[in-house]
Amino acid sequence: MPSGRLLVTDDLRPVYDFDRTGMASLNSALGKAQAAEAMEKLGCAFGSTLNCHLGLYPTGDGTYVIATPSYTEDVHPRFPDSADLANICTDLWAFSLADYSDWLKRGGDPSRLDWSDTVVDVTPGTYQVTYHGAERAFDPDSVDDVIWAHIERSS
Image (cartoon, rainbow, N blue to C red; front, top):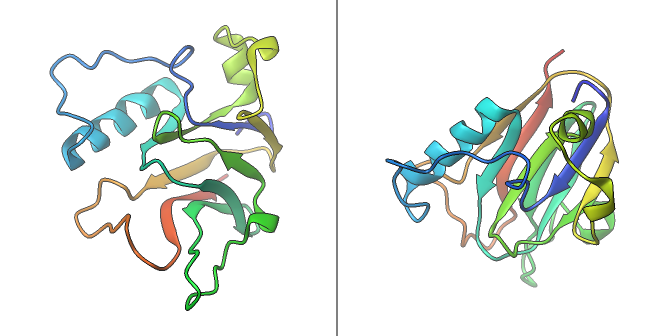
């Protein structure tokens, strides 16, 4: 995030939208990967998820995850609610991340942000987002914490 301000929410399609013509269904791994790649080309990290509790959690210096914490009695979550930097509403069953300044330049309207949109201060720079939801071995129903994406500052 060049500006050091990260907009975190479920749906940034009003500003970052792509043509789904010829793409596979979002219910398939291929469709999820295609959507993530299309949004990446527009400058927005996107990942299709379940209708689940998602949060943005810090994991180290310049590293974060989008995760669903475990809520079983046998597994202590690594990512408790008290540690999340942003709570992501999944009305769309997805997450979207964008540089706040870029979002503004593309026509984003701050007056339209609501309770489910969070602007998080991060170290300015370029970040690599690795989306796992379309990977073959990904298990969204795991009893352990489910990590949907890793985010790492690369420069």
